[in-house]
Image (cartoon, rainbow, N blue to C red; front, side, top):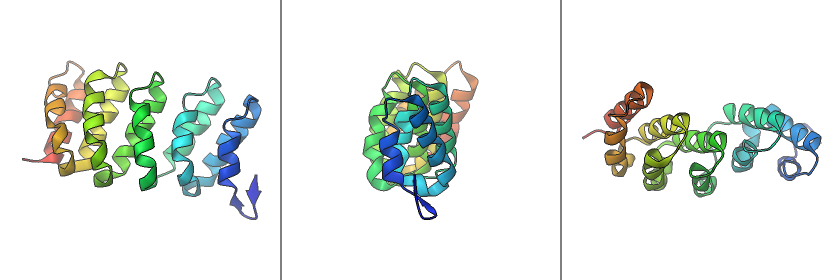
Amino acid sequence: MTTGDQPDIPRLVTALQAAAAAIRIDAAEQLCRAGTAARAAAVDLVRACGDDDEQVREWAAAALEELGPPTADALPALLPFLDGAEPLSAYWAATLLGRSGEAAATAVPHLANSLGTADDIAVRQRIAWALGKIGPAAAAGRGALERAATDPDQRLARLAADALAAIGG
């Protein structure tokens, strides 16, 4: 599924939706091997992190590890994943928003809300991290971070405190 030396990202994205797990696995693996060229597939890879097949989930997460920040137009499409039932998808949505830094400032209210409502502790930790990466533009999330800074989970409390420091006065 490549065009010359470049992977055919739109075709691979379509293949991530195939009925056959083997096709989805192959597409996720190729997107992983595409590195930052797969940046346009960020939202689809986050969705694939909730796939029924473990190998699809693993390849999608591996692809996201190498992706860098998503395109700016992908940011709004990541927000629904924060509230979804799939913790791995929520984790990666928060990660990509955090990697976007100040460009994800419009996501702050959603992130702050999800920080208090997410069931999975790793997701809550990643949301606190993301708010810190957004920096001063995440000031609207200060209240949620202050509550998280007193959480019994030490890692969450530390990440929230770090985020508060990054947001500043």
